[in-house]
Length: 206
Image 1: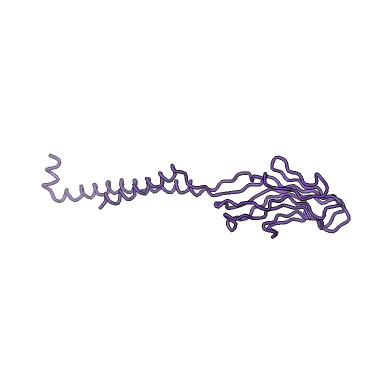
Image 2 (image 1 turned 90 degrees about the vertical axis):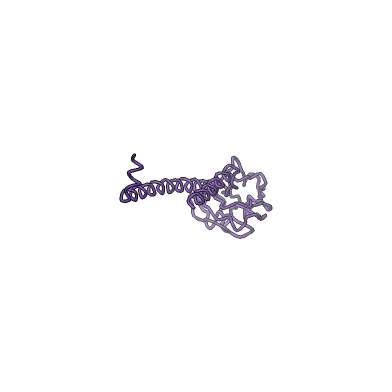
């Protein structure tokens, strides 16, 4: 009876159809938002970089006085002596992952009582990427995307400044290499399902 009334009365029919279109369009819009949200969430998971402690097993020390450069638990320690003009912790064949994005570390540096000009530094392919000659501590991070997939020389060093004293000390710790993860199959499946859902909704609308 209700349907007959709407059909027999053209004035009532149009508002009912409009309301149905609005409701249907709203549901379709909601579905699109949900599917699009799922796709964006999956893309966010795929793009999120993560950091891991740098593997120091391939590094060596350069010193003339034993114990001037040590590494324990991921912390590199430098103790200036009266013989070495420079102390190095280095790897001449460090392979940078194809998806590496950044290298970061914490440092601590203290000058001896009569030291002047000594400094702590980091080098990539023999080019100084960072240094400090000021006592204190801090955090350092630099971009590694230009070295992705390359074999480089990577080192940290304590350099003598030309004074007659030997009391400076320094340390490098919490060395992390950030990489962009390759999307896992589950993430790729979620992205694919979301895109397929958007295509399906578009076809249904047509």
